[in-house]
Image 1 (cartoon, one colour):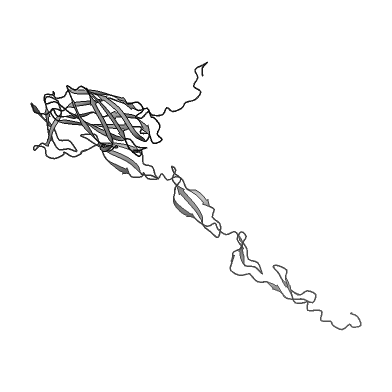
Image 2: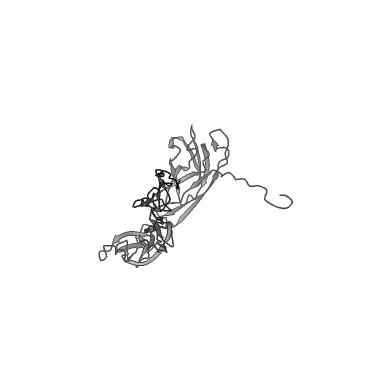
Length: 337
């Protein structure tokens, strides 16, 4: 915002295409091939650049093919300025970067080892074109050429003791540049020492439902040697809970679970309840008043014989059977009915 400086919006800035010579090195009296990379390639079909170098320190030899073919190069050299122009009939790696071409320089015989020579680069206007025949601004960087050390002077030897993974080594370095010239296995320590079990760290505690985990470090180098499982811990059995009530026909169930994870560990039966009996009657056997189970037989009636006026009758329940016998009449006399 022009008034308060608050950020209203943001937008990406397009990456600028560029030619970037990579650092290269070679021995005095020899040649150095410098890769010139194209970065953020927008699909260039033509590239133009100028590189300026010190003619007393390097001599330009020529160009070699990269993404662009050598037969498409046009170069001119004038007082330490190399003008490079490359044109190709089709886009080169439109979506990919890579080495556009290589610049080859010769180093003088008397070049001092480890010396670095620099050169600068600038784009050639209107020479960088994309596949749509549009002029593209391309940044051109400078480069560095280093004179390699011939390792012809004094050398020093250093012993590196064996460790868990590597045998002992004898490293020979150049005193002048400090670079390693050769590396050999020390015959006194031709084998790696191997790991030794050391500190154990629990990374996951075991529970009664899941294994835990621990890592074992090497006592010597402290590297992680391996990962091991930790056995599950036993369940903690709680008090039994009656999960099914007993009746006089079925057992109940007592369930024992883990106090920690609620896993059912075991069950026990609960004895059946006794029947609630009603006594047998003349017509019904002994019967449970809860479930209706019967036992034995009915008692049967205790009959009292029929009389003149009453039928056969049970003295217990009052049930009757048949009819009364009726009277046996004696004929009336002069004095009795």
